[in-house]
Image (tube, rainbow, N blue to C red; front, side, top):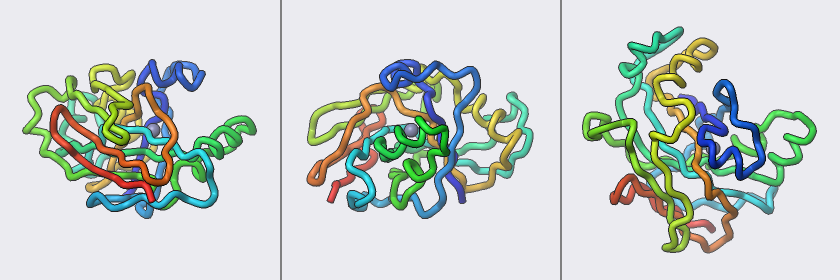
Length: 203
Ligand code: ZN
């Protein structure tokens, strides 16, 4: 499986990092070695001193898709979860300055927290999913899928022009405002609505 992630998909987050609002989706990838599931601990990596959390709604792909048409896009995902796109912000900033790729800042081991997945039928309205992140019991990020610049169907159409989607792939749909650093000893808890989706201890 592969992880495809979207950058700058919420206007308020693009602005907080002084990035322009994109005209087309900003895409990057993480390998399967990035996955961190089952509420496992995250070990702070030695190569960074400024790892940030980015809480994101995640969609699971359920069919092989190439050149997917918009009206069929909803048939290509079957479940939704919540995750964290851990980002080594210090490395990313250096690479951005030099126009280099982001992989070392984004694709490192265990940089993709993923919760258990909920079948999409259990959601009343996929375009109105509230989610939030607590750090040490304090809410640090609040988002709603209605505020995504590119919704999931648009993302599937766009990504599948370039990259074949396969069953089991995950799409991380971008983070709202409020990203920030983590420290050893922190606890991150992600919620969809009132439901606790994951709990990650930083070690
Ligand atoms: Zn992100």
